Length: 112
Length: 463
Image (cartoon, rainbow over all chains, first blue to last red; front, side):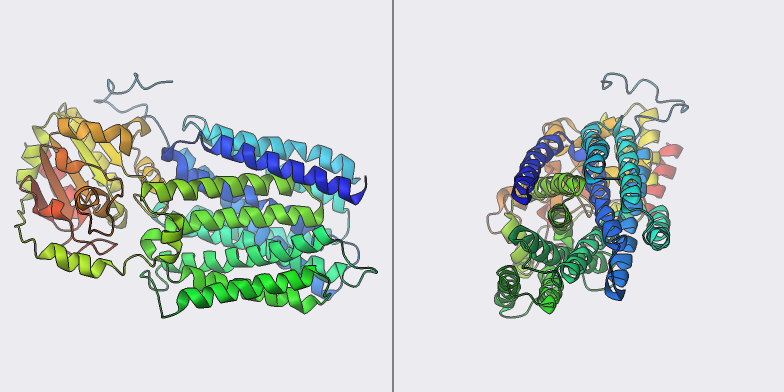
């Protein structure tokens, strides 16, 4: 595939992904906006993949080494931290603790 | 592994990221979505690892252990109240990685024969610039929220001009680089200038507006990552970055709407400066403040039919969310209908208050959004405002001179009675006087929110 064909393909993907992003995000309730932010934060941790490509490139000098290594460190902090924090948050969203006497009748009607 | 096979396998992480966001539409399965996203990320990393081959695999492993270890420990330890600065930090490192990739790419490409392709050099210049802004801006946001530096806006004369000139200079240099001046140090200046711009750009923004800034910087990092995808010809980076960029942009706009301010006003308005005159003006109104004892308030609550708690950041600072839930449980046992009114900008990032209350095991169906709860205030016996201020300020509805005029608020003043738990009469984060406190329907319960709630719990129990 020629370079220009590839570029056009990539631009197509980009535009579609932007519209898809708007579409999907607009369905997220404000209740979950903090997890949404930290979840998308984790997703842009995909930058670690780029960092791996740089560090794993066969022709590199000392400069590429240092920069690539730093990028891998930062990128993986982004990925791991992002997903762990989001998981911690989402774990806490519950309807009601199961075994709690005295307040059994509240819920129910809000079930999906 | 060749590029085609890698790109084919990258469809797995692409699909899983989209599913992860889709699942976030409902709290019941949001967590599963995040796990799907994490698995997708793992697939992306493994595929890339195999594609890269044996070159420097151990360096990659060591780097990942260091970064991942730091991320895991920080994410495990952070308190839920400190969540916004943690998000800012992880956002910043992502932007930093994108800028570093740009520096490495320009270093690799320039010595090659012939001039680099226009789209590649454009991508390098842009991702370097945006990544650097996102990195340093996020670090300043982190420092402000962590209170390492002052949260109040830091301003000086000609600030906007300096910032604009700096940004223009960076863009100019980036254009020079793209248009064929093949000097590696040019990108260094662009990245350094971007980093400086990030600092100067976030410094004048007050702590109360940080949620908008973090959301915007999140979008910036997404965009930088998508552009990095172009320079490395990597589809999964393009898609993931675009998703995040779109999400961050949308959230930023939504927050601006929730505060009835344009994004430009948030970013360049240095909010919090106007507030001094406004506070002075409000004070001349006079009016008296009635303070009540915990016993009185306990009686009001216990014999009410409907109580709405209005939590603000003060509640989070006092770590009183668990105590509020206990009080609410106690009231429910007495047959009181309890709910929570959550303003979209309560807390330090969008939806932050929901997370804090979820941490205290408040069932999420009780968390009511502004539009849902506002019509209910007229049927509410007691509205209990815990550490919230600006989001319940009737001036936003009534006083055109108020700096927050037009901001949608929770109409607690329409409840039959209002109890405000507050440390003292000091104005809130934005420094604006609040007429709600002088309303004859309002009683103030002064003191630390946690202590006050604990007293209320004891008093309600003894009734």
